[in-house]
Length: 409
View 1: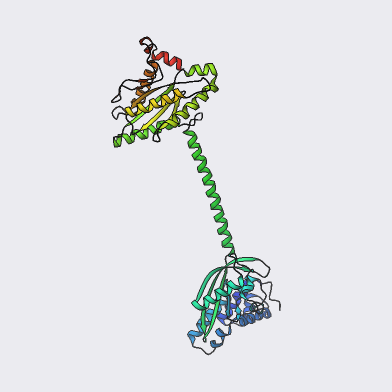
View 2: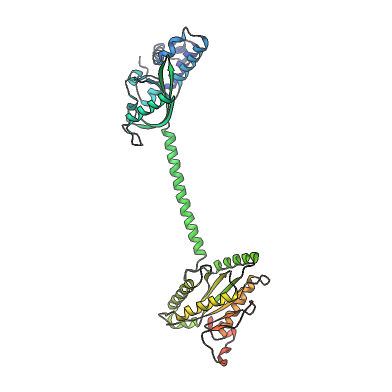
């Protein structure tokens, strides 16, 4: 009788009912509308596959033993996991799921195999399957159990990952090894796909973070000079003044403006003017201290925010910056100078007042002849301006603020 073509679950259910109820093949065949000969073959095959050591004592043993044996037989026959039994001589039994998982036709075919025959020649970790299988068997025999993952191979050549539990017990003084094999290839594939998705998501997130950081940098950076732009400078000023107010630290600002910059643009063109701005920006950046923040305030104006710095220190720094610009050889127009206004933060007057005072000091430097540093008179310890040259009295105050604004514009 051909027993193939029927679902394995149907066979297992009929075997389970036979074990639990004791019904004969004819009664089970009538219940499930199957040929009696077919059901008889299934029950015979199931009976042959149950190990003798669990069936022989069943007829004469005490009731608890028979009950335990019956439970084992049900679990053995109906388990969806492959369950196989072996001794040192090799396999001697397996359940129906073992045949289904490995694609084998019969228990006789199975018991002729070595455990390594159910595997590819080499495991993913590089060990020979034959040697590794013997190592796991020996460990389970010595310690009582061994739990590991293993690469198995079906009869059609398909490899699959499995979770293997080896359990050792004694029967009449003889060690018996039970191997329970669960196909976890689908779970492993899903785990790998999930891990790959996580990696891809992490890379995408990192790319977005890099893009956001770049956008944030661009939003805070002057495109022409590469310095901090006005928005960034305002953030820095607000932060530093808040810290200064809390901890009573001094903060000063320096405003720098290129002298006669309009003439440079009118005479040599805006491209030359842009190049001068870039060179001045680089000079300022190289000359300031590490704790200072230099940026482009707008047009040809630059600002330096000086942390933990009083007006005298800021004036000295401004003069170093003035000298650096004055001594730098520009291709065109050949030379350039800057005027500087310095103001210190006062808790009572606030941030806006400090910026206005630095701006007023800058215009004083312009009106006093340019190429000089003026400290706001509102800043403590302010003193006379620092100039490169002394101009005649007639030239010192010859320009009004309005004249200077017109020239700058």
